[in-house]
Image (cartoon, rainbow, N blue to C red):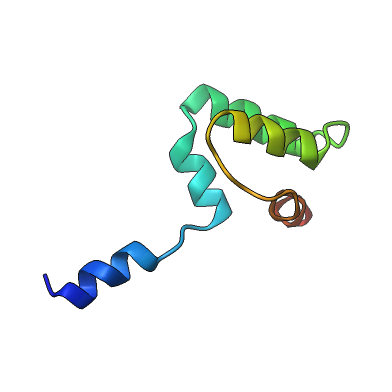
Length: 68
């Protein structure tokens, strides 16, 4: 593999969805998806819970995901 390809592979970013899906265990992912569907749970609360689990995402990213 060339040096360029090695460096390029470290610069590629996962989508927010992929980052969360890759970071959570199946049960946590299911609970996360349920929380995203529940308008009574704020995106900020979800964001803080994810941060506590080591997943760094922004509130705005979660809000955009909810609008899809």
